[in-house]
Amino acid sequence: MVRLGQRNVLRGVSLALAPGGRLAVVGPNGAGKTTLLRALAGLIRPRRGRVSLRGGRVPDDPAARAGLGFLGHRPPLYPHLSARENLAFAARLHGAAGPPRIDAALETVGLAADANRLVRDYSRGMQQRLGLALALLPEPDVVLLDEPDASLDAAGVNDLPMMLDALAPRAAVLFSTHDERVAQALDARIVRIEAGRLTEDPREPPAPHPPTIPRQPPPSPPSFARAVAAMIAKDARVEWRAREQVPTLLMFTLLAAVVFDMAFIAALGSEVAAVAVGVLWISVLLAATLAGTRLFTTEFERGTLDGLLVAPVDPSGIYLAKFTLLAIETAFVGVAQLVFLGLLLNVSLFQASTIGAVLLAAAAISAILALQSSLVVNARAREMLMPLLAIPPAVPVLLAGVGITLGALEVTPAGQQGAWFGLLAVVAVVFLALGTVLYPQAARA
Image (cartoon, rainbow, N blue to C red; front, side, top):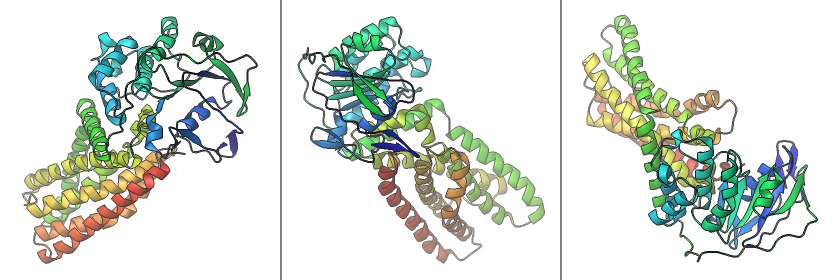
């Protein structure tokens, strides 16, 4: 049973799929087709019941998730990566074969000639074909497709059986559709769903499809460290090409520095150090908050978060990868502010202690904001919730940063810096541990 809000969306659903079998779930909008597929993929936790594959439970067992191929309403694609790069990233997360398998997948779905084009330049139909290639790339045991014919032209729909036979010949395929002709084209048994309950069609199911090519050895999921490294490398490449965060954050914080300096220098006269310290740490907090607000939201809106959660990797690795990206961006902005404010106000901010404080504070604030961003990604008012939730736990970080910087400028005794560094380290460790433990529990509804 799956319950969303106050309503039971799925009730009394029981399915068993044999290798090579194909099952079409047909029903009107709101009948529960998408919820069924998401529950089978482990993206929604049922109140009662379980999903088992390869002797393990989905989603808790990575080996069970390794046997799944999933394509939802939105193909989990990164628009600033090429088709080949999207597939290569998926292959790293699934431990799938390398370039030969990727080339075969591109050829099969008809995208070999456009393999190096950025996905943002693809038509919706081309994106759907690439989404199918992603779902079938690791040669899964079970393929879950939510309306695979969406956005495909007649030729694409006709090619669906060939794609499945070529890339996942032994897989049990379960898909939803509004069009029974798609089910017939795939030679699939039809099961109807109404008000969250399955009703089997009285027609006899066809025999399972025999395999057409030899099965490759099952891929081995990557280690935790390799999976995290793959996600960090992907995020860095996307940011480098899209330039969605760092240039905006840098310009915003530098402009804020100029405005604050112009406003307060005249009023405070000789208190230049106080102005510099205040502007520095407010800038670091603002930069981290602005970047953190979009940290998980971008993945969620693109549908790529589903792809990460279905992959056979520990979900805590997703949190750590996002934390790392945010920490790097925040540290970059903070160090740039040290240089800029030092030149603007003729204050010696660029010192070893202040650089260390910025780096450690960036880690602490990023740990807080990455956790908050992951927890409120499904909330409607997340843009408003993020600052409200993140600023209170960030207060000790700001106090420590201010204390270290004032000590470096000899406004306060330098001997107090050790205690402030200790506070920063404690906050960073505590929130990193919380995020690593809590995110896997909160990632799935």
